[in-house]
Image (tube, rainbow, N blue to C red; front, side, top):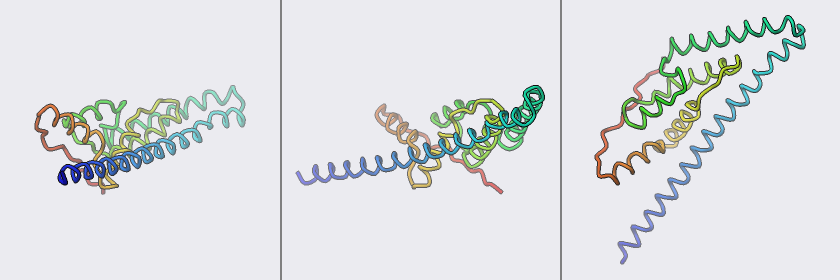
Length: 174
């Protein structure tokens, strides 16, 4: 009977650790997403400033030129630094969940954030990948594993499938 009680106690402790880690990851991802949103909101006011200072007839072509420059800079950063940061990021997340590719967040996140802020302030839309990357960083920073790894491991274990070793990010930033 003592062994069963010990197992229950360990199970409660594991659930508590998981809950704390999940809350920290949620706060990290939510905080990062909020900072991104606030940055973009601040930068989206530039067309109004142009219209106020130049008048609408002059501001429209100038704003179109600035938007084109911002979008082009965004695309150039992505193509040169982290091509896998292009697009919605759904393929990156799916590939990581299926252990087909590593999540190179050290390279992808800065590019996604900088290029994303440029793209959004030009009027383009940023995908969800940035929030997923921030959640991954928070989990790793707290010494845990991202929730998708834990969910995949649990699902495979229940299905009786042995999980191959996960792909790891070996990117070194200079």
